[in-house]
Image (cartoon, helix red, strand yellow):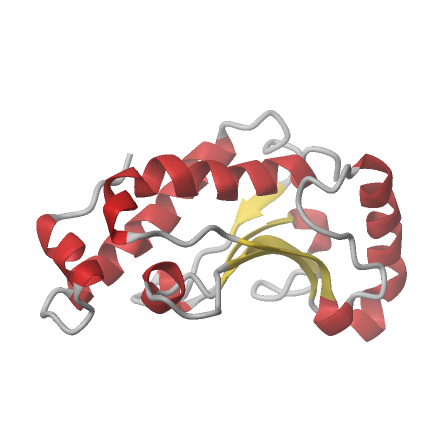
Length: 178
């Protein structure tokens, strides 16, 4: 379980403080730690992989996602991603309208629309609106988008307990049947 340092908690309380780099690295560690949870899921051994950002880059600067090996068209561009984007300090902790988003995304809609529509139809049958609407039109390439809960500073010590189940739950819910 990832916990935040006193400096990171102070940063969340005042984003102008000197602890931004520490909090950024702790959020990156949190995102990286999701890999272990996912690898323990029964479906993981069916060819799933975890996105690894480029060497030296932070996870918070890149989408964190999973994909299947048979969806790969190149090392860095699978056809379909199940992930989270916009996992930034501002979107997590600052009072703005943006939220981090859990999603299922099709990388090249023009080329993979048919395959994505089959997956979408499969998800419509399974989904009971637990994670937003299944968007069969795939606006912007998104088959599913679901906003992540924001945090108030008084909730910061429960960040891992609240955030991890949201992300792992979303990925597990959809990946288990794909």
